Structure formats: structure tokens, C-alpha cells
Image (cartoon, rainbow, N blue to C red; front, side, top):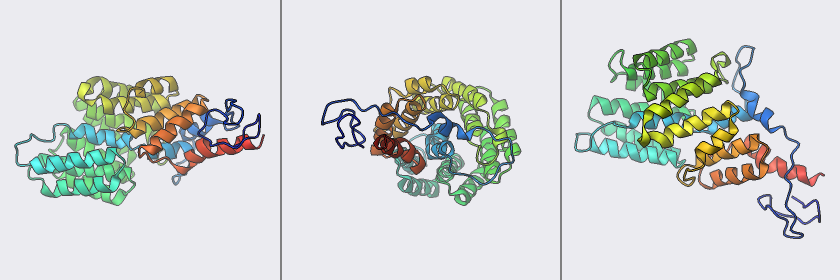
Length: 319
């Protein structure tokens, strides 16, 4: 990038020119909001997934599914039980996934699953493994894990409906998936797991079944999950609520909800903060937070990186 005032070459992450001291304007010809909102429901039949910025952004956000996994893992067992080892290893896997180390997470969750003794722990470790596989787009492995989990769920229980819905999604039976998520919700409309799952469902189907995408509904259920999950779960439910606000164009609320996170422990909070600033037209803060997210292990899709971090710099050199 070159300073428009004196021509000095500078790094794209510098705010002020080292030659003349003038602040870089970072004005962009990109239509930030239009790129983000490419994921709006289409009126035509769904086709194969595309690499639109918004869709890629959502796929990169492990918190959409990780949030569900973490919520369900609360209370998996009691230390001092037969499943101490499985619980400890499961928690290690979740920590690895939060830190962006998917391979270690999967290895730990497989170990936890294989060492589980009780049906409840077998259910939850398989379920968590399914969520991680699904987030990593290992769909065959995810389907196998969820089908194994279903063996340990009591018929017509909350878990039975939630796991059945995940199987429906992977088999592309979207109407049945919604029916099962709603069945879980109807068992207890205040259950944070059911609400969190519905929030994800209404946010995350624009690749495959855009007719089910409903951002306002997602926000309602994310808000309810946040309110009902309790203080111990706020890091998870608040993150998902912030993301739901983002897709409802409430960018300031997204930034507010994510402002107090420890970004070294929660790099995707920085990721969505950066994306919200970008949507607001604040490219300097967008670059700052996206770089912070990457430095702490978040995976930033190449299309987003090019649009926010690279194309912007190239654009300023042509003027």
C-alpha cells in the first residue's frame, strides 16, 4: 500500500504513514454489505454450495455448531463416576476445538467416546463428535456419529429429537429436521439446547435449503437460549446471540455483545467483531479484529481475507 499524500510504501496494518504522518483513509470501492448479504434466501431451487462470502463466513464460524456441542456437554456426568476419564478427555477435546485445533479435538473426542461406560456419556461424546465432524464438513463421519448417539437416547426425549434432527439435516431431509427440532422445542419451550439448535437451523441452510432460512426467527431463539442458559453458559449463548444479530443487520449490537471477550481464548469473537465493523464501513477496525482473530487461531476464509485485508490495500494503490 502507498500513502496517497507522499507516496511512501507502508504495511496494510499501519494506521499512519511513517513518511508524512498522515492517517490512511482506507476508503473502499467494495460494497461490503452486499457481499456479506449474498446469503439472503434465494427464490430459486437450491443448488450446490457456492463460495459466496457470507456463506463461507458462516461455515468458518465454528461457534455456530460448537456452541450447541458445549451447551449439551454441560452436565454430561459427575466426577467420581465410572466416566471420569471420558469426561476429562471430552473436555480436553472441546478446549482444543475452541482453540482452533480440530485434529486434536477429534482425537480426544474419539478417545472419550471409546472410554465411555454409561449410556449418557456414550450419547454425549458421540453427539459432540458429530457436531465437530459436521463443522469440519466431514459429513459421512458426522452422520455415523449421530446415528451411534441415537442408540443411547430415550425415544421421544429431548436428545432423541435433537439428534434425529441432525441426522435429518445430513440426509438433506430438511422438513423432517425442522419438525424434530420443533418437537424438542415443544417438549420445553424454555430449554436452551432446543432454542440454540433452532437458531442454528434458521441461520445455516442457505447453501442447501434457502426456503428455511429465517434470520428473525433465529434471533428470537438465540435470545431465548441466552436468557435461559444461565450465567455459566454466557460465553456460548452470548456469542451465538451476537451472530444472530449480525445476520439481522444489527451490527452495533454484535460489536457490543462481543466487546468483553478474551479474544485469545475466543478468537471467533474477534472474527465476528471484525466482520460487523466491515459491514458498518469501518475498515480500519475490521482489519484490526480480523488480524487479531487470525493471530489467535481463527480460520478466516480466503474470500473474506481477500475482500477485507488484501483487496482494500490494492484498491488504495490504484488511486
